[in-house]
Length: 114
Image (tube, rainbow, N blue to C red; front, side):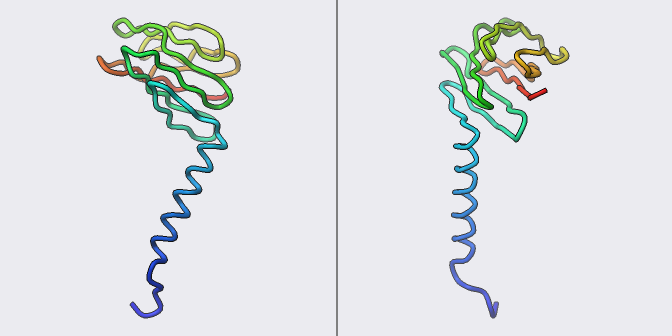
């Protein structure tokens, strides 16, 4: 263990956490009743069902309107679209929107820049 500096791992973890927080702030992600998992050009948004769920990411807003069975209506970038599980992506305002999954408690969509 010679040559190791105590506390270096803690500083690295703190630096990584600060970097991750900075990236999230730069991406401009925010949500209410939803969570986002974003990369550079795409986000997976998981909406909680039964609440007014919405999220902002990649410079756009998304909101869960309705979910019945495997069909979901969402508003993305100001446009309402109805999506079905397993269907190809739908183009909305320069983004490709895909319904990933629908469960009793949540709805997940992927939104990617085209």
